[in-house]
Length: 311
Image (cartoon, rainbow, N blue to C red; front, top):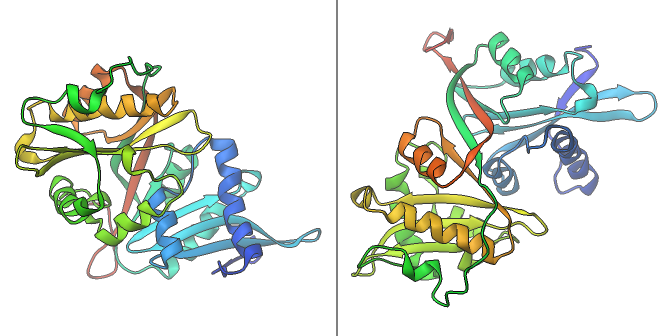
């Protein structure tokens, strides 16, 4: 079987090769119910910062058929096997091939904490290091008709909530980096990363809420994401200046974001939160969010002598 599987870099400028690569991910979404590649991985592929890999096998009917897809680079690895070809050992063969050319420590996500991913991780020297809870809200209430809405009536005195504006970009990036200083993905966003997201079809400035103090400084934000034709809206990222935590700003922003999603016709909200962020988990639970699924991040460390290290 290992002889029949081939790893190659698809030309994403070729529509056929692009379709073959993403067809594997789409098949996994249909069966698993979640995307095997997170948004950052997809953006990195589009921008050339990470490399797409396609795993193909020989088929008499179709010659070569894509049965797996991976995204590698920047110390990260994402791999998915088409559900029709699971349970045949292709995942292990593909991962072994990817690791043969990997350098240094690697992290990999298992979206949905898939049982097969646990087995692959254990067999190839990966250990779990993070758990990301995917929470879902109860039914969102429609706006109550208050003309001012949540954007002005919930914050404490001296704080106003309104839509993001282009002139906020540099200040937002600086604040976001401080809030998520220890967060490997969110904390390293740049102005260019922000602009890439603003260029996405789903972006709307009025969905990006920022809280400012009486001096006009940003002290928090709640960016909500509304995909076309999706009943579920997302609390895309919510953050509060560390000097303003415990003052109700986060709760006010969250409520404002939920009302914004309801205004946009969404009936449910989803949010991702670190499992060990007890304060955030408690806040979401208070407001009726419950666990929907879990993502697990694995790490594979290489010691200076080239040996695997589980720590």
